[in-house]
Image 1 (tube, one colour):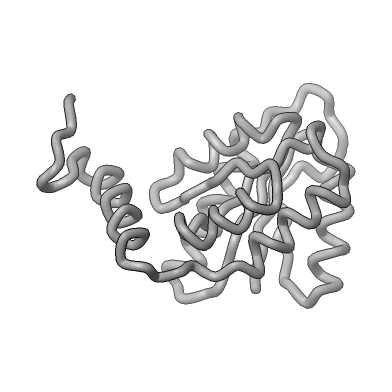
Image 2 (tube, rainbow, N blue to C red; image 1 turned 30 degrees about the vertical axis):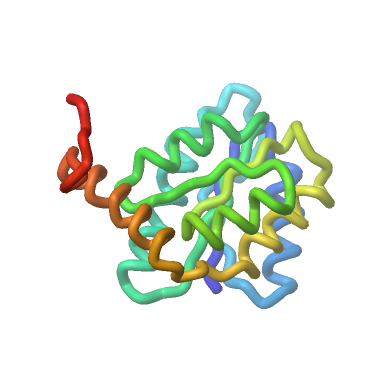
Length: 162
């Protein structure tokens, strides 16, 4: 599987570890930065680029997921979710990592690098990658509604207040 990763200075050590770990498991890893430490760097472009690459790969039929992380993971998730077609989930334990894929078909995971050990974060990512989407109708229906709103600003048959 192709894994796109991005971070900021807060997650650089985790990034280096994950690249080695994921490649060791046979994944193709694309690093969207940063490549060196800069305490004043900004995460949005890194995370947006990673999420956009995930969406482009998946649209091209390439099996791909994304991993974004920073101090808390919150801003990185927000940045990734600005990309049309990205579904980034902030995870903080194994359960949320698995449910993000199983119920929400998340294609990007976001983690707070300052909130977890490298071992914990690695476990979340491994669980996320391993968990398939359930394909249950109720989950697929909800994901379709998110996509519909994302592209049209409305959800047919639902009251959306503008």
